[in-house]
Every structure is written in C-alpha cells, then in structure tokens.
Picture 1 (tube, rainbow, N blue to C red):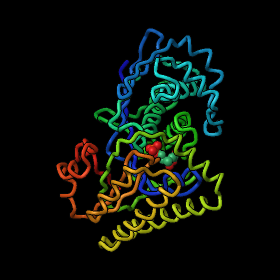
Picture 2: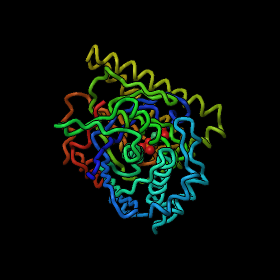
Picture 3: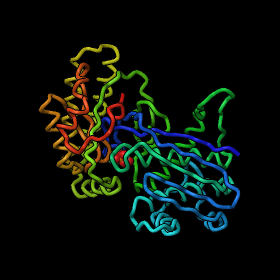
Picture 4: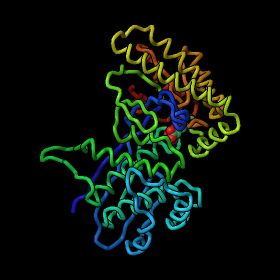
Length: 375
Ligand code: PMV
C-alpha cells in the first residue's frame, strides 16, 4: 500500500484573538507556511508517531491501544470535549521521556485521542507510521497545533475509511469535499481541545478551509472579496503557552467582568469595523482606508495589552515599526510569539532582510518569502 501525504496551513489572526474564545468575531487568514503529514501503512501491528520538529519518536502496539477504545468513542459533533482526566491518562500512556507538560507529551496525547476516537467510531485500528513535519514555528501564534490537528484528523479519518481520497488520475493534489472538510474540522477541534483546553475553533477552521475567514462561535464564513494586504510577520521567539494565556484572560474576566467584558466587546467591534473596511477596499483601493486599518491595529494592540496578553518584546516591535510610520499588533495568543505589521503598498524595501536584521538583531532569521501573509 502507498503512503498518503497531506498538508494544512498555519494562520494569522488579524483581529479578534482571545475575544473569539468568548463568542466575539475574529478575522483570520491562512498563511503560506504549512504542516505536512505522511502516513504509511505497516504490517507489524504497530502504530508510530514521528515529530521531527519536536525531536519526538513514539510507537505503540495496536494490541496495547485496543483496551482503551471503549473510553474514546466520539460521536461528532455532539461529543463531550476531552476531559482533563482523559488527557492526563493519555499523556501518561503516551510514554516517552519528555516530562509531563512538555510539548511532545501534549502532541502525543492529542494524536492518541484522535486515533482512539476515530478507531472506536469506525471500528478499525489502522497500523501506520505517521510522520508530521512543519514549516511553522511552535508556540508562536501561527496555529501550529491546529495545522497538526487538521493533518492528523484528515489522515486518521482517511485511514479508517471515513473519508475518501479523491485524487483523480493525472492530478497531483486533491481536496476533500465540503462535507469531508467539515468532518475533518470538527475532529481537529477535538485535537485542539486536548492541546489548548478551551480553544475557540478559529485556528482549526482556517487551517481546514484555507483563505480568509470570519469566525464567530463556531460559525465560519469565507471572506470572498478581500483586498490583498501585505503583512510583515515578526517572531519575537519568546515562548509562551496559548493554554495559560487563554486561562489568564478567563480568570480576569471572572474577577473583573464589568471591566473585561467591555474590552472584549470593543475587540469585537474592531473586527466588525475592519471587515467593513476590507470590503470597502475591494471596491475603492484608495490609500485612505489604510489609516483607518492602522488605527484599528493600534487600538487592538492596546486592548490586548490591557487584557494581559502583551509582552515587552511585542511592545518593542510596535515601537520600532512605529518609528518607521508602521502599525503593529500581536497575533495569536500573545505573551510573546509573533507580531503583525501592516505594510502600505510601495513600502516593499522595508522588508529587506538586512534592514530587518539591523532593526531586530537576532529576532528575524526567516527568509523574506515566508514573512508575508496575504489577507
Ligand atoms: O497563538 P495561537 O496560534 O495558539 O492562537 C490562539 C488564538 C486565541 O484566540 C488566543 C485562542 C483561540 O482558541 O482562539
């Protein structure tokens, strides 16, 4: 039998991070950095998971996993989210010498959860080698865990015969149908829940569907008429945990509801206002719209600092870019990770690698082609 190879993109959130966890609008777009998965059937009754980015290599006997099946039946979409107890059990079961909260342990638990869910629902325990490799930096706000979950969901659903692989003769790549992508997205959300605890679902939605999306409370709308925006992505390389940052915002919301709720509502209003501007830009490409977009970026960055997800290095990116007349905000969970800077047309020279290296010594090793997102 042949290998299956598939890929899913990372994402950039333009506006709405954190607020989206509390039922507000987020605007996000897929990035041209992807995660790739190769699944190869094996005959020796084993299942292996190789994650070269994390230096992790694990394998299990199918016979070892069989007794766990009963506990992981997933009836999509009504299923209960994975319980903290299940996740703990899976981390323990995953084995490896990585430490309890290590990213390798969490990634293995997400894999096992998805594997067992699909296997119990479809009654098949596929014995496969799975290799996942990513162009996305981990924990940088670019949705690496969602792209991982989407790749796993697609491969495992295919491995259990739940979805087809509609590759036509002569075609090099194929896309699943809308219905199949919907099933993949729902399962990937479960993987995100294992990894992040309480994700909004925006990351797996963008990674599944691609393109530019508006997302609110599980409702996904593809933004059909959006202008091309040039966005500079700066990775502060400050590591942080989405799970901890999301939990921190929730704790503040519980402690200061009358203060936090209006801030989240303002972020919602920013996303909605931005949507209107983007639509207007497709009809009228005048530069006037940019100053409004830039104002929204600045206001949101201040709000994100206000809700406690800023970082001194993100502020530094904002200061430096501001001294060049540019406007930046954090993207994703914040607390480090990446910032986005809106670039007006005609400012391409600012992207020059040497110039960036001078402005952010030690922060920007990525090639220029990988630093531009399109919105
Ligand atoms: O930093 P990332 O890529 O994990 O993005 C998280 C986005 C949040 O809004 C902070 C969380 C979520 O689940 O929507």
